[in-house]
Amino acid sequence: MKLLLSLTTASLMVAQQGWYPHEGGLLKYRVQIRFGEEPDTMPDGFKFGRVSAVAVDRQGEVYAFQRGPKAPPVVVFDANGKYLRSFGRDKTGKSIFGNAHGMRIDPEGNLWVTDNGNHQVFKMTRDGKVLLTLGIKGKAATDSKTFNRPTDIAFHPDGRHVYVSDGYGNARVVKFTTDGKYVLDWGKHGTGPGEFNTVHSVAVDNTGTVYVSDRENNRIQIFDENGKFLRMFSHLGATQNLFITPDQELWVITHRNNIENLTYDTLAGRIMKVDKGTGRILGAMESPGHWLHVTPEKLIFIGSLTGNVFRWYPGWLAKGLGAEEGLRPAN
Image (tube, rainbow, N blue to C red; front, side, top):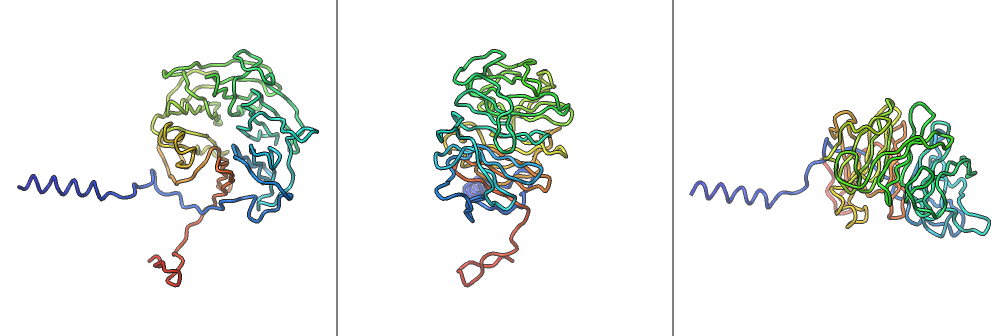
């Protein structure tokens, strides 16, 4: 009888389980869910499509890389969300990109973007002038001059090298000099160390260690600067994007696994702050998202395929709306 009661109690406890705790503790942030559109200062008729990436420069200007036809691919705002400028269309008004994907800003303030539709990577000025093009437009291949749907860019701390994750069609990371000379590449399709299934993001820390989101294999692989496998994190799910801050914090936007990510179309994501040495999760919170950028002030900007830029800022409400709205104030 005692055994039966114990089993019954255990079953009830499982049945009544509610929300699981946030890994590493809750990150106490608030959110502006329509940054750049509330208030809407964009020109008449401008509207975000899917926002694939976001980046913030040293001046605090926020760059959104978006796929919709109702605005240029790159739309720039000040720190408060006021429209400043936009670019990325040719003289006929057509986008110069086949499909917007990744965006980063290098230490000199140049904008780098990946176009996984046309298999190219561009280095641009802050107002959209193209300084360097990697890849051949419309040509998908796997040699030193081509990509097959590249996804992301990262910069070596020496200031002389850049890494491209060549990750939807190919399964490799490619290293170049910052003026576009091919150096080396590594990776192939598979599930073993140094093998990839959708290389979706890449980041480099201040020692030159390279962190690679191997998204469909539900892991992050870590390499030295020349592609020697060092270790992996296999507990962080299907990582969409990686970001390492100047003070060497690793932040990720991730999903429980690759099937959840694809099924929910990035809606069920979590932002996590991670110890990059051990992989220990230091904090987490829910957010949709495809891309993230963390500023020195610890503002978190998310590019979301829902058609939003989210601006997360530190803060936590002390109480609810109040009794007059029918909600009980927090104690």
